[in-house]
Length: 284
Image (tube, rainbow, N blue to C red; front, side):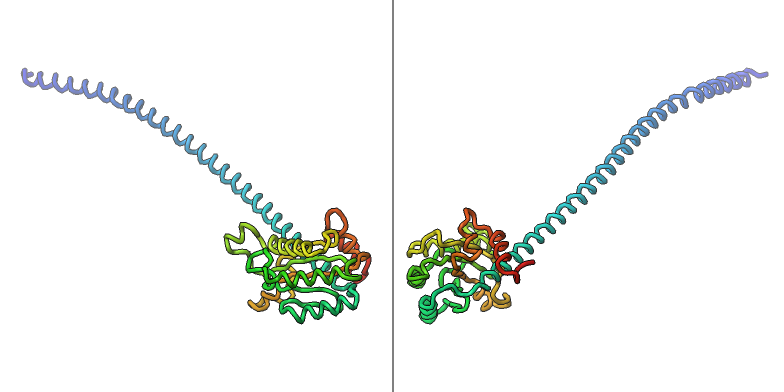
């Protein structure tokens, strides 16, 4: 064999050896790197799966908490509606009880109140029940519980009638009413946050003014019915003006409501219970 041929065979054998060695070495390194990468990816995948599971649990927990809170809110709103309905029914029955009583005023006082109604527009008197009704526009400015100066003569004469003769032994219950519009002006809200506050505060202002004109405080009581005792449906501005009013009920000292007023804390529920006993027509 020629020398060149021998050299060629030797070179080929060497290359084959090198190739064989390389094939056995490089894939092992790649395999280790691939295994490490696979292990890292598996760990990351497991971590992400755990996070996803925790997120699902958190979402389920939050959904349940939200459902529980919504149920509690619905229950609270239902209870509030029931309380408001009960309060409205209570007020209706109490008003009916007061208006069902006959006029306790002596004839002379009744005639004087009728003359007073002719003298002052915005003041009405029912001779059958002895109930006096004041338009709030006569007594107050809009959204205010401060009695107008122009209303002082009317309240002064009212007090004089209630202080003369047999009328001076009668009780007086002052009740405030509003229309159905909520309090909107910020300045008014600071003093009267709701119509409940406004109606009650107006009744209190009338009581204080009547006391200043001579009616003893122990003869009087005050209450506020907000918008829940309209005298006519609140269908327009004229009707709303009629519902913004203060009513004064004159009560005989032995009437159940008058006796309830003499307690330490006047409770309309207690007064109504006594009225139910007095008048079977108002019993449940």
